[in-house]
Image (cartoon, rainbow, N blue to C red; front, side):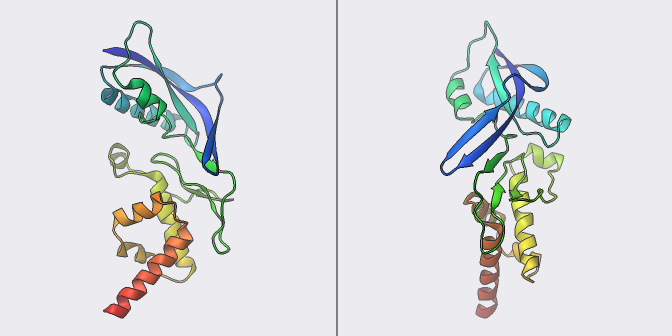
Length: 204
């Protein structure tokens, strides 16, 4: 078994083109550190996510990155360095990444942040739309705050152009998730949904 010290450092990230830079307040931290014990990388990740959820509850709306230190006298589990460096341990799940130059779509604002499982989706110049995760979603693979915020923006775009938000139900969740992961602007996604709905009506 190995012991690790977890800490949450205030941080933000900005994406410019294909590059992302992270600014961290290395001399500060949110809340108290936590010492955890794990014998493998797979056993460590849930402990990191639990620490992140608790920190986010205590500091709502804050953007942060989780730092992991291997305690003196402990041996790193196999694959730890690769998992930590690639952020596969979930250390950046609460790090908000903003886009330096959001690209508008046909007169609508661009996307300022695509969000993550635990950080909100946000349009340029606007607060995130109300979207929340239930406790069950927080603990499952289905909960994703960024995706829920994106879907809320797509529904709002549908309403803006006079289409029922129920049109979202014409596509499977997997298809919608694919559009979100492909970073499809909400207004474009709404237009695609309407076109598909009309095509279905004509074919009926």
